[in-house]
Length: 475
Ligand code: SF4
Image (cartoon, rainbow, N blue to C red; front, side, top):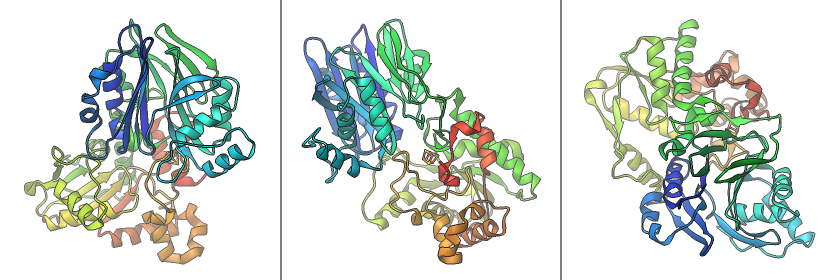
């Protein structure tokens, strides 16, 4: 995934930028970067690897070297960025979030039509996506036409933040608004952010939320729309159910509040279809499972508890040893049980989703080893049947890594892959079979998924404006 933050002000904005970017640290684990512009010093840039050390620790020592009244920065889950680019459009800095599925094709066209001859910012043998986006923008005569062109030809998505050599920010939301872009404002300037809480904490108030494909210029005095929003939107549903920060609002809907509502809807549905369980506690898988579980507990009348707590102070979030055995060991070491809340207890555990099932299986094993009598599982979203092709959302290399697709293959072979619609719906015979098979395989006492309608109701905005491709395979 990844996220970005930019600030443009009449005062020095380095600290705002530093904290604003840092507040996007939950969105990525690989690279952090900042570029600041000063009229006298020009652009100053720094990029660090943040795989084992958080953004704030890595950039603290650079702060004294930065000065300026405008800047952009990012947390990147892919390539090192922001990049500094010199073209016929001038010198500018750029950071992007998204995915380019047709990168190879675009690179070949770039060489074939003579517009360019090289890319410099390679990572892992591939062209840096941000450099490719900049190259596409540079094919046109101005930033607005260039951004529109890039977004038209990119298969995937591109949310873009530019800093010009005039110290202005140009922000562009993806053509279908898969991710949010918000603008905050105080007396001296403006900022651009994914997460609204990031700028609230820095003293900026809500000012504007870009529509899909909208492009704006942001200066200390406010913003000017350079290209109007489009009518069609497909904002990512997972922003609310999983990776958005609890304090943030997207399209006017708060993340934490949505999660409570989502849990409530699941509990009501369990009651209505007679699958409510007589459990001692409702619990959530930390962190994003917790609010869904609170909602479930509130609506089911079963007490909420934390039978295990994640020990985080000495484990950097992104600590990911290559060896699977060590990885599982780390996951186990992080989960500290509260025996009084587990031994001989019937638990209902809610998580935001079940992707590969590996983590959930380990958590359930751990609860049984700690003395749990029953472990019922509820997923706060429907069965994930398709990999995301619009955002750099998961590290999965193949859809067959999904627990659902693997189970379908085991149940029915290739024929099963033709009936994914049915498998995704627990009310059908195939859906029921998949549910039972996953339950058995992962040792759950019972399993339930939130329905698609339930999830959409919990978000509460126009359903046609929400991306649900992960569950339906429909764009
Ligand atoms: S496919 Fe899934 S993760 Fe990707 S944008 Fe759509 S809802 Fe979000």
